[in-house]
Image 1 (cartoon, rainbow, N blue to C red):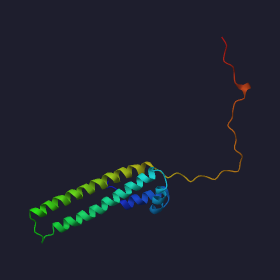
Image 2: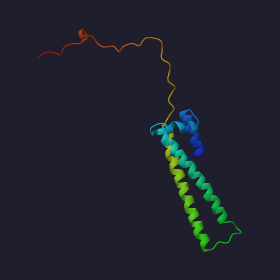
Image 3: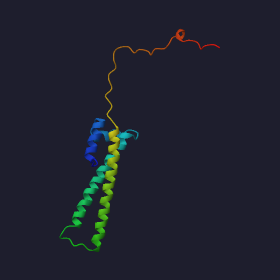
Image 4: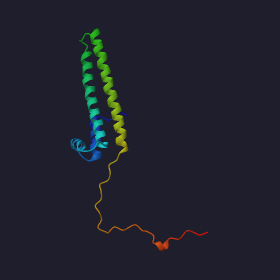
Length: 137
């Protein structure tokens, strides 16, 4: 199974919390860190990793262009770019797998129901006469 993309993660977070990501980010800034803040941080890390993957992939294409000569300095650039690409993929996959597992474990709570107009009933409490004394010896 492929890890979810940042866009897919954003949609799932929005669905779970019932609001667009910018509103959720503003809401999370005003609160103590919690599950929402952690999910938003994971989303941010995944999005950054995806941008890094795109940048390093394009750089590798430039470095390996058929008309480009490859000498010793270019090899070190190729290796460095490939290493950075591998790191970005690892970050994306790890963060996406973790956030995906967390999101799968969460469900949206049902909306609270309005209170009914009937009076609340007190829980039944046994009267003192209905309790039996402990058997004597």
